[in-house]
Length: 322
Image (tube, rainbow, N blue to C red; front, side, top):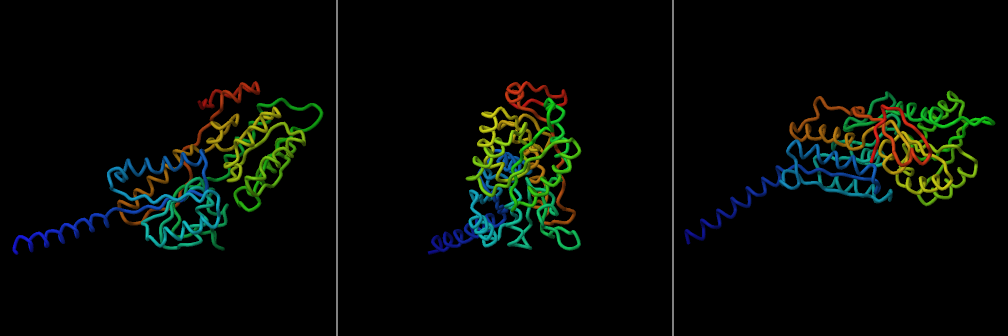
């Protein structure tokens, strides 16, 4: 009887310890809005930063719940609510569409964003210009677009009979896309470029709208920070290459996918920077001293194959992407 009682008590103690140990493991929700090779680099960087700081799924020192909405807005909202119901310690959001959705659903759980413009550009600031108190992570201004856009008049030969024509797609429902377009209009005036912009609301429309742009005799296409452009970039690049129209971009991650060149954030480092901030929160269990930050690592990159196709020579301070 004593042996049985001892075994029973031991089982309770072991179970209790196991339960406490599991409870001590932080739970992180990671929400992707859609499937995309470029923004996937940010997720990789985020997870690597957590690992470096001792939070690894392999070592069972963290539980990561991952959801990808696959571009489905209702599914995105349901995923956000699922994380909230699970009472996760923090939610990582990638890109801006995930950030705005999560912020709309919780004011308590810390949100660590990545691949997102600064809060005011995506409508997340209040009347006093303040971002939500639970918003952290890493964001980007649109100032870097100037450097990328200026490559077009510098690297492409001028048209003797008219202004250079640059085509761009934008999504009216994405604040950062509209803001980027407004900035490009000013840049077009500055560089004496005719900007031809067409709106697109979903990936299913991209091929048709891209062909419409190409029919207007554009000399270059500029891929701006737009989630629809990210998700459909291969379609855009294929159509432009067939029409012998080079693609430039402000997003470094799109260069490896076929754009000629860009000056912009390193997606992996963007996620890594957000991951380090999240790790600090997990270690201290406090948000004291934390706030959303701007991207620290930007780089100038070019695609050798695309540059060769259009006989374009990049400045020496641009790094080739394989």
